[in-house]
Image 1 (tube, rainbow, N blue to C red):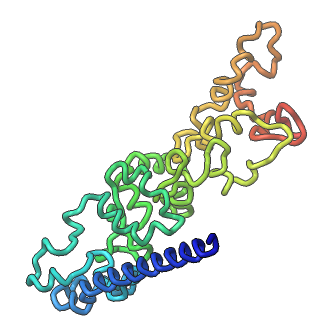
Image 2: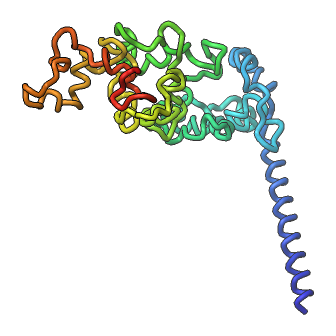
Image 3: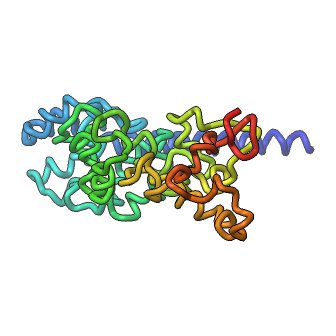
Length: 300
């Protein structure tokens, strides 16, 4: 009896799965019938098609619906639009979609990419900057990723305050083309603050280039590990040397090491008198990012 029930249960499950598969196939066929193909779109939209065919989207098809390759991958099935004589209400128009709605259309295909998995929670989409804020399928100005403009000018169109930072005497060489905004920031979203590619608290972003500061060191400078590089440095640009947050090295050091000045005058060593000769703490404490030989970061 038990064996008979098991056989019946298996048959029911198999038949249910078969019916579900048949239903899915039927719906796929019905959906496919609503697509007319890009060749039909070209008859009215030749200028858009001419620009589109040079991009990477031309042969993209929706899963299970081969006829959707091309225009209808983004605009949806065009049969109703064609049969109505071009009624704009019967086709998906990006001009009438919100940044989030349009981005959802793009993510139908691009969400599978590891570089786009965080976009729905990114600072860009939260501020209504969707995919078409930076990319243009039909009118891209660069061959790279269908961008509207080359970086960093594209980023500066919104981040004008950063443009000012990169014009300061001490700055990361973004304008010179040596590094890019995207080397540090993930423009499609990141779980890290400021959409960083890695945590700045453990200096992971910075040491990608500044490997000599990476360590590990036997004697760590605690601010580097606790607060990160930005405890002392301004990442984009500064009027101070070495991107420092203070104009004078001693001022920066004393913001934490104030006990040097708080000590009674007779006990202050002459080499801590802050005179011109000793105005830079790093004259002696040269290994300020960390040392393998000395706990006060002398070079020995």
